[in-house]
Length: 321
Image 1 (tube, one colour):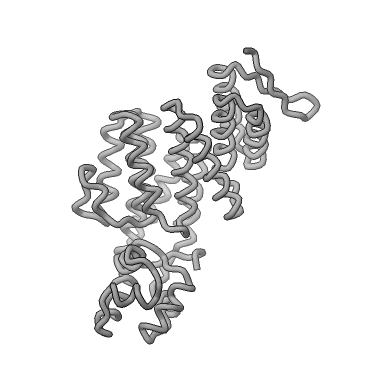
Image 2 (cartoon, one colour; image 1 turned 30 degrees about the vertical axis):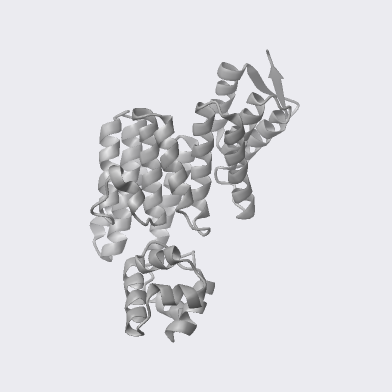
């Protein structure tokens, strides 16, 4: 089911109407289906794709095959959206910000076609604004303009959103990604502590199915704790990110998480850091992120007096302390 994308707003609205037509309150449903009220709210508000098992339970109560109903709301051209989204994420992970313009242009062309549902249009606009925001933040270093774009992205689906009351809303995976990017700008403009609070909120408001975003948030939380010189906490969240990658059989962000793990171990005086650093470099080699490997090597040399080199195809890590 997660190979496709759906008009979740329309599906959620129909789910809500079915519940009401049966005279059921949200409490009635959560008591009989054994899911949390927060999960039901997310489904009815179009914030999450429900699991097949969850829809099976709902189907019995609602007297309708909801898995079949969901197919009615499958979006066209999702493969194109997924391709652009994957390309963007790979560039963001590797730090290849200069070529973001290519994906921004592809998104604009897709939006110009116009033959799509309102929900899909909102989704594409949000992705476009996120990409533009990252470009403004990283290339132009214009944090104000970058934040303005993220604010506009959020308002597509939460019109009354404000940073002053961000904890009041229920979020979709895409909206959490927007909030995460806001937290990364706040780290630059208002400080690490406020950024960390927002990232921890993001983490708490993701469902287990939203593990891809969870991995990115684990990395950023680990990095924030590193900046605060809290190595134990940094190591804890790096390990949670690694565990999530392994559980879901993905290499995305795994090399970066092992780097965060290595630096936390190094700062804690643990010899295991060498193994973690070797794994980080090896994983980045597998995923073809040579630019990122060079960045890591330079950081190790500059900040930790660690020289990383290859001798007879073996990675050698030497400390000059």
